[in-house]
Amino acid sequence: MNWEDIAKELTVQTDSKIVLLVIDGLGGLPVRGKTELETAQTHNLDRLAMRGCCGLTDPVFMGITPGSGPAHLALFGYDPLRHQLGRGILEALGSEVEVRQGDLVARGNFATLRDGLIVDRRAGRIPTSECERLCSILNKAFAAQADPEIALFPGKEHRFVARFRTPGLADALTDADPQKDHKPPIPTAALSPEASKTATVVNHFLADVVKILEDEPVANAALLRGFSVQPSIPRMQDLFKLRPAAIANYPMYKGLAKLLGMATYKVGAETADLFGALESHYGEHDFFYVHFKKTDAAGEDGNFEAKVRAIEEIDAFIPRLEALKPDVLVVTADHSTPALMKGHSFHPNPFLLLAPTALPDETGSFTERECAKGLLGRFRSLYAMPLMLGHAGKLKKFGA
Image (cartoon, helix red, strand yellow):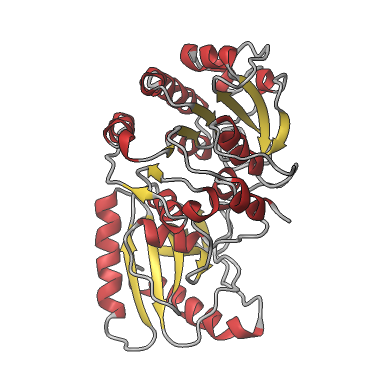
């Protein structure tokens, strides 16, 4: 029997409320002796840490660097080794893209190609309006062909969703993304014989994009990753008897939330918008996932100081969470994104749980090294959901 089977049997619906605040990419590594979290002034988070119990989490296993999808799945109580979702379907659903059975979708980046190398995977984080213009150019060019049907849907800044529609598509493909700057573009490759046709379709598309955008000075190539077709996964309502909602303003996170059955709401781009939406809908649900992105973006840019500022920004909003008086409040991260590494890493995430039934420990502040001293120890993120449900009184006794 696995955790999902246990959850179906033991969970009960109650009026108690859970708030899960995910500070994306929060964990870091020392620069001048301190991590970003240790450097930031976090009076509110430190105060919660001293009142609650703390620990460290590993999204998959020690040493494994996770993508955002698997890392979030684990926090929501789904084993990421059992449910492997392509990033594309999450971006597509979060961007309100229609995805039919048999469609293939992928997450895309506009990139800068120069002298045969991808010199900037994010094309300088072009404005969203520029992304919209480029998608329009490409959609007009691809509209001339009947098969395969290809459509691009602009996202924020350099991001877009690509949708391929033709019979016989499969998602067993490698990413068409070198993952690092100053490397040559790489084609996708089929991971199964059934996906060989799809690999050909995708690689023709990538070559066509370079031809169509050859006169563009910055965004003149495309990278694709997270190829996926429509998956089948149980909803949180069915597994955990929850009435869940997601408060997020990035498409990928809203897409994953929708896939798991969470209600989603239109949320503005500012941090205050997240908490305004949470407060507005607080009476309608019993589980709230609140997602804060700025820490991860700063870490990926290698900007230590910007990540410190982002941590201090979210810390200032903690009193608004407390004012709602949730029965269980968890503050953690999906994964670590140290500015020193300019990307996701395998380092564990600080974890804080506050509830009347949680025994306070001797954690002195909300930092990586202090959380390591907490009573919860170091555990897989998969255990976060049973911890939240248990402290919320939503789990029956197991066995006689």
